[in-house]
Length: 76
Image: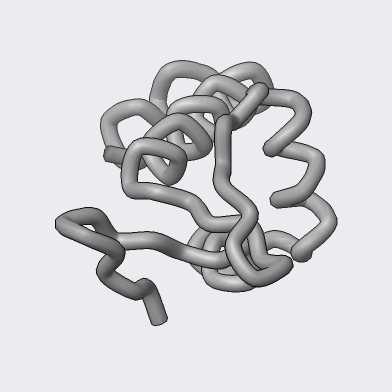
């Protein structure tokens, strides 16, 4: 479950994988592909809500390539 750090929710890679229905390794690839500036705390990557939004936008663009703009209406 996401934890509050200061005023911001933080997610670990397993939680992000669960949110997007992907494997943990996919999340690690996204860190590199999207050049996400995630923090590593106690050997775990920590993602903010902003990172989640960046990944969501990336996923939407990828899905649009395959399924067209019709997804934009339903994905938000």
